[in-house]
Length: 95
Image (cartoon, rainbow, N blue to C red; front, top):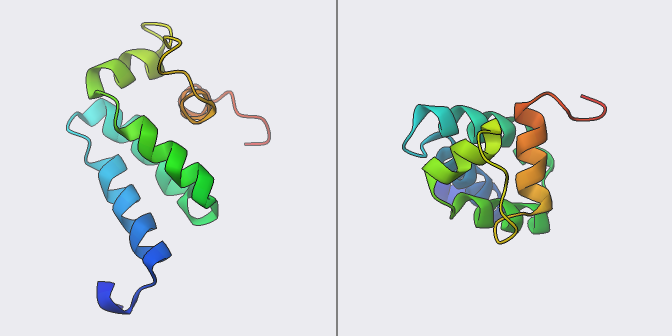
């Protein structure tokens, strides 16, 4: 199936996966990319919007926050970022 025959939703999901797995640093590619790849099919529009907001943050900051090297600062804190961090640490309920 080519991108021309995909729905706008399918194209958005593909682009989010690509963006999440090609962040610029291997560490964030793994942390964010793995989270997105395993959940993108069931994400709502609102969740994808929240994911896009997280992906606007700098790689170095994300790596520090997701690994726990630094706490997530209030200006960047969001349910999506906390979910990605929980997944990175294996702290997700039901998974």
